Image (cartoon, rainbow, N blue to C red):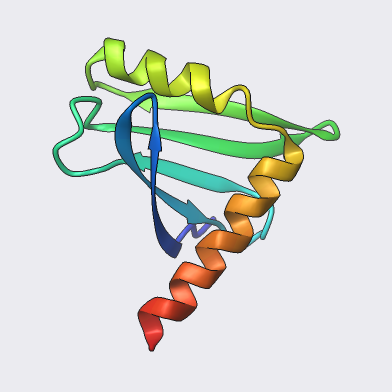
Amino acid sequence: MSCETGPLERQFGNTDWIVYSCQDEVSLVIISAEGNPAMPFYFMFFPKDGKYRLHGEGNGDKTYTEAAFEELKQLGSADIQQLIVSTKQAALSAEE
């Protein structure tokens, strides 16, 4: 699955992350930004059994990945949908 719509810059856990939405229009990938001590690390939101799941993977500093995870896991479906919309808006702005 391709996840290249964006980029959208956001902070989670007081560190910088880059958000992209995926071609399925319901999934998100959140990648540690350049200079983020969590680098290299990514999170992915994807729907399963009617609700969103959060998965993370990488070798970044756990202090920072855990802080971001704690904030991300609080996001509800409406928050995730809004991030998807925002990635599409960011992609359109980048094309102009």
